[in-house]
Image 1 (cartoon, rainbow, N blue to C red):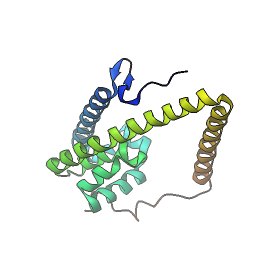
Image 2 (tube, rainbow, N blue to C red):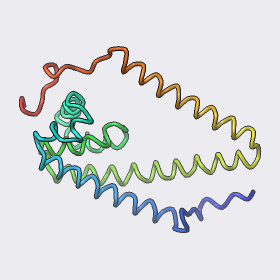
Image 3 (cartoon, rainbow, N blue to C red):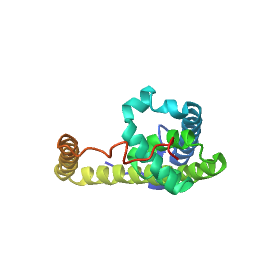
Image 4 (tube, rainbow, N blue to C red):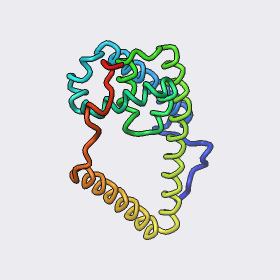
Length: 178
């Protein structure tokens, strides 16, 4: 098996840099939609389907992060999986200054998308290179990664069932108290 030149990387026949650029623009657009949806929903965010799914306590914890860190929290949310999908809504509901929100989300898209895209692409090609040299070792590596993922999921579910309750609403300030 011949491993292609990494500088000629492509996805579906398109250069990888183009795919990454389109992905960054799409994510930036999604973050703007999330912000304006949160801004429009405001307090109704808690009662919305998304709000009920996320849970009021979690939303209130995200509110505290936004209150404390502002636009920096928007940039940081790209690197934290749970926050990446909740924080933009909350930032809109809390009426974070849109100019700073836009700058932070643009910087987040410009840094997070290429790092994750190229990182995942590199991991994929490293694994394929290993598979070309030793299919047994590649299968073992994949099994170890799968087992680790199963253990992490089980530990998180167990922790969730063990009664580690999130902070009570009284302990977390909501946006109405600000």
